[in-house]
Image (cartoon, rainbow, N blue to C red; front, side, top):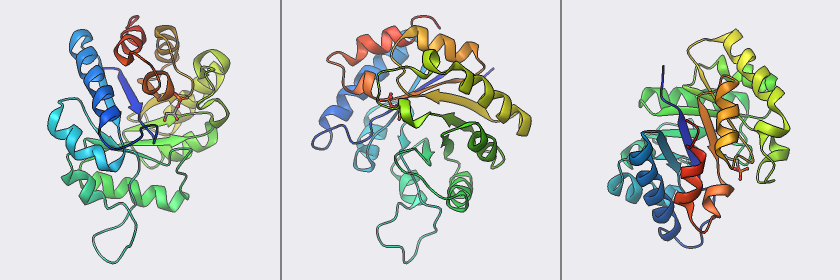
Length: 222
Ligand SMILES: O=C(CO)COP(=O)(O)O
């Protein structure tokens, strides 16, 4: 059994480079050490290298483009993300949506470089489609609950249950994460009891005065 994953998406909550990403990564590393739970962070691209150098927790990109080195202005090159020390990458986050063809290309590029893949989805049907691309994780996040403070585990457990079932129906080697409004140990426990392997979250930790305290609460029932 793979150990549960708590993945913190830092989005663009931070003002200025470095400070808040470092603060959240420090909290994540401390709580990961205390609890034995795997806690990863997905900072802005500019923070990948400092975080991967200074911390031992897994660091994820928030997006990659399925391109190879060459003439692609303004794209995120998977090789650059790998060289910056990323362990993996989000793909198709609700705030950075891609076409199915783009998702496939991004997953293929990540696999070529042995970057762990977390493909985000917005409903049961897209979860099944994402599973067919054989990423490491499919992360189901109902967009209407993202940043709402209302937890998917409590407001819509059915979408988690049905997504796990849909993913399992396509491939049994793809793990499922869930996210949106995750804020307590209870939310994490419900998600795991419904068959997921962990959670993807942002605001409850990133906006907290004491991110370590929130993380301790999140892992408290594991
Ligand atoms: O989008 C999310 C994580 O990728 C969820 O965000 P919140 O935890 O702020 O709802």
